[in-house]
Length: 242
Length: 275
Image 1 (cartoon, rainbow over the protein chains, first blue to last red):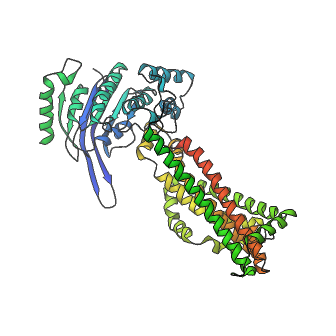
Image 2 (image 1 turned 180 degrees about the horizontal axis):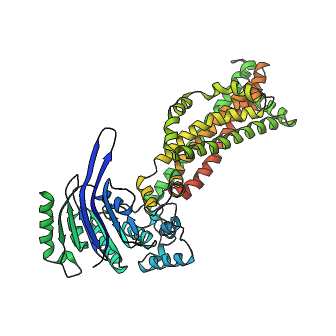
Image 3 (image 1 turned 180 degrees about the vertical axis):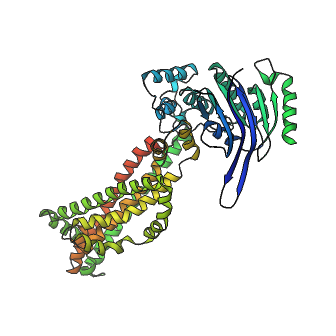
């Protein structure tokens, strides 16, 4: 398998007048094409920072960031951040609009994506008229519309209530797999990580270092129903507790 | 669908309350005017210095018939609207500059704080000396009174834009200009409207003070001139007209506010769907 993104020996320091904080220490990992990888770790360990580094919004203090040439990243944040002053369609076009790629062809594509994922009748609605799950789907379409190759998911389900969360996370991962994207998910929810990913990496608390890596070898589509699910959960849980 | 009996009762109760409020508001004004009239008619208060509603009405008719009243009203409204608009526009532009450049913003902070607390009318005589005895000076005073508040309010709105919404724009590769136009400005519309509301009142203060000091026209001039020749009914008339104008301007801003909030607000509307 081809490696499409990764970091090598990166470290990151935050500076403020009163102190210097070491957020990440000598961290390395690679992501393969089409892979769904999760990063779990305790709250505040610098998981989200890692995604900002991968997307290029933040420069590491030292170390290298690798993104395969010609590959683009797309970000999905904790909340959907759909703008209330725009309709769902116009929200979905936001990324294209910013990248100045909004034309008839790309608009058609957005219409198509909205139709494919069941938001056609909501195109001219405003975000507050949609349920949490539909909003998160619209937010994903906004990212997908810019045709990224690697999706960076920053706890995109944590703002949802538990029940919605289960169905929405399944829903979103199905879409990501259908579009054949590579995805890196940051989460503190161990079961979510196992249920969605091919591989899980565990980070320590600050400064974040790589503690261990688990290949999730479950054949069935529904990871949660596999007997191995419990096993993986216990292993990762223990790793986090250490 | 027919409302239940309880719902009907509730609606009737609310309507009754509404009518009561309107009636009391009207009655209060009526009793106040009636008492004023009676007291000055019977000599309980001095008619010469307190005037009376009827004398105010008579002088209104008198001044309206030769058109001078409308001239005064027009001048004051014109100055207020120009001062208000330019204060808002310039203030917003300055806020954009300060948002854009954090260094300039930090440098200017203590000055803005002092200017904000300073009673701007204290500067009116200086402005009149600089700009001369004319309408320009009055508009400048009105502008001065509203501009600093606008800068601070709008800048505050800009700075409280959601950090993650900005990150979203950045993650699509958006420039600072796009952050401003796609997130910061639309999301700070409510604080912009708030600035508008404050500015209406402040511009009025600026215009009236300016007219007190200089000018041959306008309601402020009418107040000062007539108080000097003890034509109290004309002074009172000007104040009454100012009350009406303030009410009308406030109403106009309210209509504008509804329009803006309808477009940019985060209000919750009912879910509609074909399914």
